[in-house]
Picture 1 (cartoon, rainbow, N blue to C red):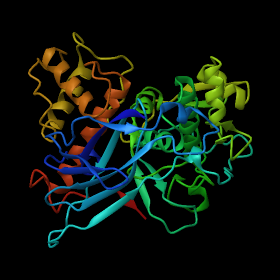
Picture 2 (tube, rainbow, N blue to C red):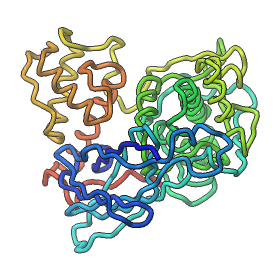
Picture 3 (cartoon, rainbow, N blue to C red):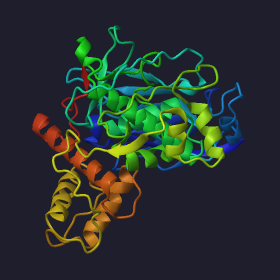
Picture 4 (cartoon, one colour):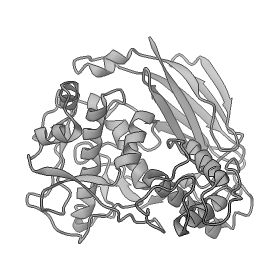
Length: 421
């Protein structure tokens, strides 16, 4: 047996408020209590270590067992409904992050209800066929490639009456990658799969594949039609770091605007004309880079392009990292955002530097923000940190508009997870 690590983060919807003092019990499959934890002022627990199946099992395409070890979580906090999470998957040598979004009790509700999240198998373990259909000709619906933030996901097949959920695009990609493949895979295999996941989603948005058919969502979570998304699932650090770096990059053919239709399947129990997920592992072990792997499965003239058009971001990333010694309006923007965010996340230290000058207190605030939101804690505001700060700023100010933040924690007034029908 190996070991993996887990951190649990308990917050309200859209990360707008951390829930401190939440109690989390972690049990194994036999029901034995392993940990009894309490969240800190940022709504997160300490990192804990858990047993995990040997890492080599998740690298073997012929292994038919379960290449990870699963646990159950029970989360409760005063004023909120309880959450029971089934099959939190821990991989040998991997850091796992379990996001928990608690729903406030209603004003007249006296007893909390218990909601359950079932994580289940990864798509790469499934035997059902994938019949992803895409545009037969090069599509041109939107004028530009846009990152939809949030993206609207239908939690079922297209014609089902399942709910829709709106998710920040970066979180969506991290969830899909963590749901589709194993986080233990080699770097270039992970990158190739994540490029395919990003591009598949952007193709659906760019061509308005579902909205042109009268649906009110961008993509489904059905593996028969699209790619796997499991609401509330565990995210893995090895995947998260890559997504933060490349979330606005996508695959296209040379001299074309549209994201290429990057269909894929596991390549073992299900085969397809597109990318083989297990095949990427073999190619990565041969020393192939992500773009070489992608060109192995898709046309030779594909390239990696980038879009900086992101909906829901008030001020776009300036294109240059901000760090100690930087000056100007972009620094002032970040200082303003962080000082507002710290009202909800008081662990972030106050910034006392001169406005527009990136000094030591600005760096300290950035570093703490990064550690709270699972970014590389280097005190430098690059693309990933800029967009995360912007996203959280929008979330906390929107919450203030909706609720006036009357009761610091907003019991009974904080909106639940965003569902649209």
